[in-house]
Amino acid sequence: MTSENASDGRIVQAHELKVEPPATLDELRTYLQYALQIEHITIPPYLTAMYTLRPGTNRSVFFVIRSVVLEEMLHMTLVSNLLNAVGGTPCVAHPEFVKKYPATLPLSAGDVSVPLQHFSRDALQTFLRIERPQSLSGPPDPRGWTSIGQFYAYIRQGLLDLIDELGEEEVFTGDADDQVGPEDFYNSGGEVFKVTGRDTALLALRVVSEQGEGLGDSIWDSDDQIFGEERQVAHYFRFNEIAEGRLYGPHDLPRDRPSGPPLDVAWEDVYRIDGSSTVAEYKECRDKSVYHHAKAFNDAYAQMLAFLQEGFTGRPREIAHAIPVMLELRDRSQALYRNPHPNSRKAAEGASASATFEIDQETIDRAVEHAAARIEAAGLSAGEPVDLSALTAPRPS
Image (cartoon, rainbow, N blue to C red):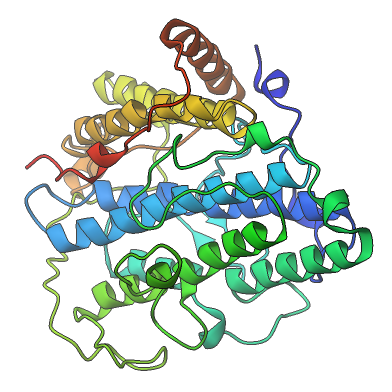
């Protein structure tokens, strides 16, 4: 079974979108699939920065980055629910879903480059460019959006226009059984909920936007208002706290520098990597152990996408299979980053081996086959909650 057979969905290219709200249901579905791709493009760089922190160091930084990764997974799930609700089909188990790095931030007017980097000041500057909120960005540019929040604002406006034009029942035509609910997936930092109509659709867009860039002209997300959880600073401001080495105070505003307590950041306690390394490069080296570890990591990442594909396209219970794969990725990353780069010249320069996040069609096909076999063997049934709390356990020291 190939990835094309696994789903009727497809990958969307940037040229298929315009700097304006979607005007038809097909355009809305296209924008939402692209939103799914945008949410995912950040995950490999964030994971790379997190994995390259030496165990036992930078614990506060580790937990900050992990909290953002988990919320990006939540955003992917909410966007998939919204896409399903309006009659679309999410597509994640596809070789083009995992971009080749360095990638370009989709639809960015500034052509923001997104490389794979070890944790560093440069990496934090990349993350800040990705997460830059509307309150700190300029107006939309003819070349594209100047913040991801602007992109979601267009989706929101297009959705409301289509509801006014066609009626809510004609917009929300998806199968309710395709929705991922809290019984299927638990995520720290907000929670998954089903999208069943106008109100829940707008709430999903609100969660995604405000966790990323804050509520209005504020540094804070809205988790306290929506989920009854303790509020946090939004993604941009969490990363800026690391960059500045200081937490925000309760009354700080987006354009303020953090005024709260200091945050200890040990910039040198990292595994330095060459983010341009490839599996093919590893294979050419005399010692093949890093090659096998890198290939196994990519296989596991593709398996996670295959399980998410099943969960996002009509079998929400199967997302549970992604949980142990996420833990496997953490363990496999250590088998890479703790080793010197197999290229002796790069090793002499202090580079460690690293995950490459290269997912080709063959890798996806193996992953889809593996996922189908695992799902058939497990036979998960509905009714019992799925807990991802293992992902919040402290990393190995």
